[in-house]
Length: 365
Ligand code: ATP
Image (tube, rainbow, N blue to C red; front, side):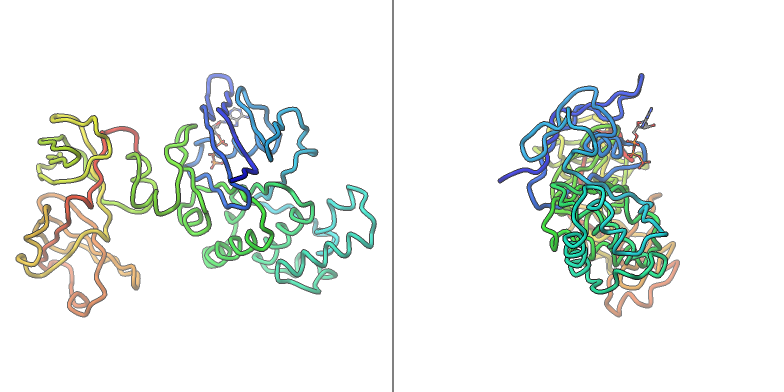
């Protein structure tokens, strides 16, 4: 496998703050790599070091196998798309896309060919003479990407480019951006604090927290096999409990929660033992619901309670069940039996022990 980008032991300190702390990762050629993390975790600092706007305190950055630390930003084979696209309103679309090529001194006729090719690739053929403000938000995004892609960068850096768009357009652009990346067959490095953007588009996601990578993997890995409490809490929704380990057998933990519930879960931290502080995460879709207690008696964890809230959201509707001093969010099944549920109804819930992820108590979002 060849790598377009390799970051080795990257560290950046600003005075007493370590914004990026010994981060290493490789991005395979032609892949979509995202860095996902909360505000202030160090995402932009990594991008700015790759682009050359910031010098690392230590570590190295290689593009196609060569260190670029001594290469000035305008000579690095990378381009960057920002949230504010910075298209030039006084230029038409073709002039915007061809801007970088003109600065490189390319001949007019050649620029015209490249611009037309790029307009085809972004699905907007023949609109080169139109003005920027005649375009929709999504079309502007595509033009901003085309403007970078005509320069044929080895790596395209995208810094929260969908942040300024409304929700509906953002949903559509997730699919479009992934398609554009495939059409240009270029390595994209994308930063976002929005897990759904990262999950939909990326081949690999690195979850970042306080300057470090907590876990790197596919969206499925992060969602189904979180390696830390932070990842379990940050990626997807979960019910979460704090408690102490009562019994430990291999990776099967029996935990007593702070409110007194005893529940079984799978440990991801083998060093955990009786008496240790623990956190348990259970996804709302992992919990079964029934109006008959017997249906769920075979689960390691089962509770009886009452519906306290119905969160209607079409197929993604949930209910909140209050049971033994806990409020638990459960996906509402689509079958008719549950359509009539209302607040105050008695219900039973249950889930298998291996559906609960148990971690030693630590930092969590
Ligand atoms: P956001 O999603 O809000 O943009 P981020 O994950 O991109 O956040 P960074 O902008 O990389 O985070 O910032 C990481 C940390 O480094 C923060 O604590 C920030 O205050 C600090 N930081 C960033 N740039 C500087 C700077 N030029 N001088 C001092 N501290 C800085």
